[in-house]
Image 1 (spheres, rainbow, N blue to C red):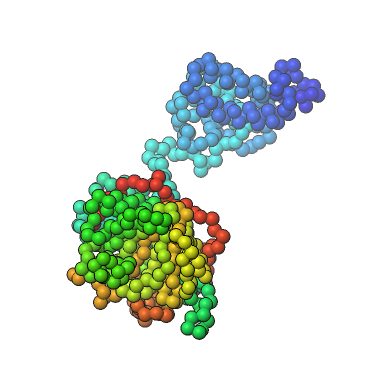
Image 2: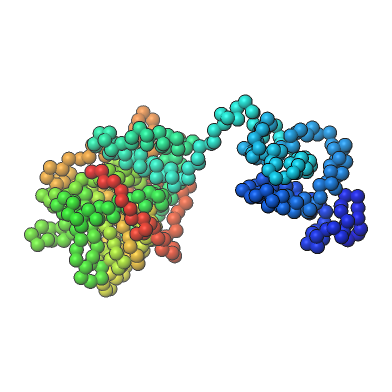
Length: 510
């Protein structure tokens, strides 16, 4: 012990720094070996004098002359062969025949005056590098760094970009595709899992809730007015949401500059709370109320709007492939709603110019949608009703059956900026004059659930049909037996999605 006199393996007490006297020899030895191992790093870039000072200070913690005695005793008892070069540590720093003066402890010498030999002796007492950690000197020059690992967010962005480029190539040819150089970069970053494998993993982790219940008396009978509603969460990653939001803001800017066709863009003057919501429509122009020309609510068949952009078609394909929407009711129109704080949507039932089911996707911030057969206006942007559903960012709400045709729904004044995109399929008899269905939105097949793959190429949705009638029976795409956890619907704190900080330029490809 330090306080018990001098032993054969420790220096005299008076030579020990007072700070070191608080530690026993075992601790000092450990500290000395640890710092000796790190000497090349600690002294990197220092002058010879400073390097020598650091070396001497480390040596003084547990002097080598005492360590050498202990080491010799240890060697006589240990029959384990020891690497003659005394190398340990990271294989990237040396190989057995390394003669470089900067990459190994055994050759580190600048200004050390023979210290490298002492360091080698000290390090031999630590551990010997195992054979599997030693690089083959013949092949050391050919060892390549492993490819960088991609996060799921990077993968999600890569997948959506690839899908959008595929859409663009299908419509415009290869002019909007990747250049050869860009393709090589993406190939170098290719993760171990294929896109199909990653998509299946994400698809099986979508959370789905389909058991909403709210009983009200309708025509003298107690019915579940929410039958047919479904909430699908985690359909879009944060990266994908950011990309979609940025694209929407680009569309808004383009609309304000008059670069969108006809009535694609609409921005009513804000004259009071809840009256300033911006809308962008694709595929058809929908009239919310009787307009100044006497046109009733519904699809305006002679109004011109832009077609669905490629990025939105990527979204539609995902909704069908991931069993959110049935392949018998693939949307051919959509409307983007851009809310400022305080904006709202009054109580309504969607016009039957659109078939059921339809859906709305939420971005930027969480909000509530309110359902009931007797929703009442309580003030500007304030409505009372029977049942609220929280819509998390990135979620998709399906409206079908009673939830679409018996219960009215509204969005009270939103607490923060919000974007929603509603996708709907038009009744063929109500389509605009000259409307041509998008070829790349035809024949979309949903992914199969493992062992549920249909035989003979049959489609599990073959018997289901879209409808514009009330009380339509919904398609039960999945059920609780599949093990999907249910999203939190009550008492959730508002989740903020990507805000104005994410507004960046994105390529418009339509």
